[in-house]
Length: 303
Image 1 (cartoon, rainbow, N blue to C red):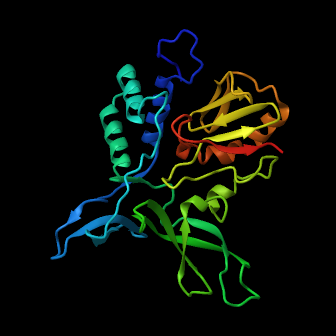
Image 2 (image 1 turned 120 degrees about the horizontal axis):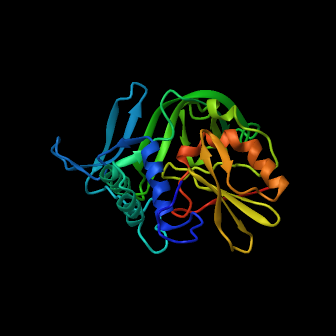
Image 3 (image 1 turned 45 degrees about the vertical axis):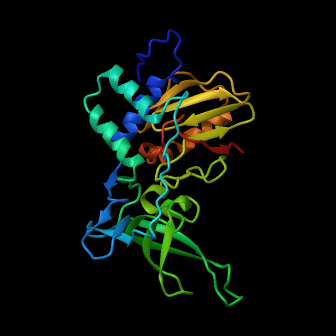
């Protein structure tokens, strides 16, 4: 990614570069439009849309609640960068680059921030492996785990009783203690459930698990891999390094055709090997990893 920010010694972490990564992120993710917050006038009682559910035939239904009881907390899905709002960061890139779909990207970002579009990292009909911990009155099975290969039957985005937006996946697996189908929280991805197609690429390595951390908003946190002396950060576009002291942050590589291409060699064999062994697994999640700088990182370590 060439930088036209104007800084003579730009190391790839300027506002323009972050905006470019955000533009790529928005271009590559899958989203679903919602009407969360809209008032439904189809009945005598005033109802407010608090969510949406998508089914296996890809039809959707609104989740409604009496307007007097509906509470929706408006939250920023991303933080700003260098004291600039995330929208301002994106606009800086669009204005300087002449991005052809800049208006559409700004509109999509606004819809995401306003809950009028949600991210869809998981799809109906996908097959996943689930580890379910039983909650039973029978002591002999309470706390025991059940492993099952199952299918996602619906994806639900809705605000909870506190008005906080969250996503749940209803799977075909039935809980033996309630006789109801199991709901998965997307934040538990990589811990209590995984997608079969992606998990095949996972390699047992010297990095502490879980390597992928899904957020409540449906994107993956940038991965910050710590070794004894150095830190490497991986997002949807770039690979960065900095000293553990916090100094000298710079881009040292990029994603290209599912591979990491380095512009500067890592000087730590153990760290380089750990990243190399996980490269395919990470590449399959790449487009869902948020750009570094606009959200917290997920910290893991090289053993």
